[in-house]
Amino acid sequence: MKGLKAILFFMAVSPLCFAIKPEHEAVLKQLHMPYGFKISIYADDVPNARQMALGEHGVLFVGTQDGHVYALQDKDGDGIAEQRYTLAEELYLPNGVAYKSGALYVAEVNRIIRFDEIEDHLDNPPKPTVVFDKLPSDKHHGWKYLKFGPDGKLYSAVGAPCNVCDPEDKLYASLFRLNADGSGFQVLAHGIRNTVGFDWEPGTHHLFFNDNGRDHLGDDVPPDELNQWTGSMQHYGFPYCHAGTISDPEYGAKMKCGQFQGPVWRYKAHIAPLGMRFYTGQQFPEHFYKQLFVAQHGSWNRSVPQGYQVALVKFRGGEPFSEQAFISGWLTASGTALGRPVDVLQTPDGSLLVSDDKLGVIYKVEYVK
Image 1 (cartoon, one colour):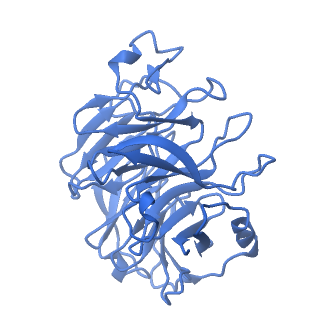
Image 2 (image 1 turned 60 degrees about the vertical axis):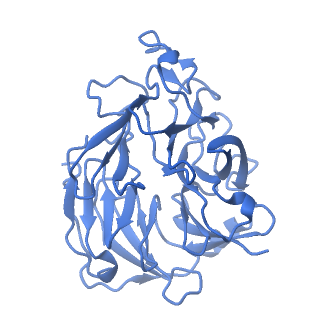
Image 3 (image 1 turned 90 degrees about the vertical axis):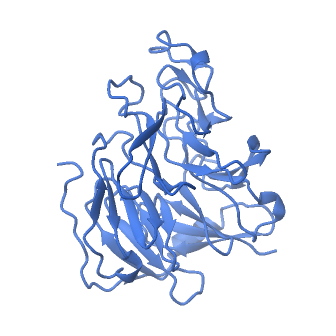
């Protein structure tokens, strides 16, 4: 059954050591960044790398959509994670990972599980504890992003089980949170087609989240969305209205766009904005402080592909006002995708890590001027 497959744990198995592949080094030479920045490969051979979480002792945890959860270590401090541990496999799209108080939380499609004292048992991971198991099991938009909020609660979302539909169960297309022990489940917002990335703005502590717009309305419609949740129950329009102003041709007659909360920023259509982080480190120049880095995974159904970059969404007074490319070059002039960024994570020294599920690598971005 979905989500109930046996979990295979690697008991007392040595970690996998690896070197950076020459073809992946070649991709680095195609990437473009602002002057003064350097990008390198922090970890190679991390198949289908998706969301990342950092442990308190420097271990990087990586979720995937191929059933595996990994732990990466840079034991010699040379800036490259040379060891990879496989913590579990045969999980149900374990896209989301979050870390708190020594435990790794993993979001599968239909449940959230927890590995206790994980950094002390990388080569002999414990049997997980089921934190919450009452989520829908639909695979379509079922993969989840998982993160602890400023309130200490776990946040995630349930995507719509379709391109566009109006499910009877209102748990679909929603944002939710719960306590770390699985209690206190609470739906916070509705009308969210598929968010796989969110973060809290450092000044206001408001939650900003990406939402991937519906398909098959054309190359440039509807825009993907950056939305803001400020603490009250809100509805963001799906499936009736897209990007705040575009009535759905099938469902739009039921409810008008003016009834819903519109986005605070509109991306280009089909770029698939996923993981995002507000920068709070000290390494980058001051004008990057409290600005938003967004992994744009790239379009799959557009006649001319777009996205395939890490964008910088600039904020002023807690609101976005512009967007520009920060890392580009994964999409070639011929339309070939060399890689697909998924998540962005800040490290304690102020560097950024970026996951790439196409190449199966983790990049490290530093300011070296």
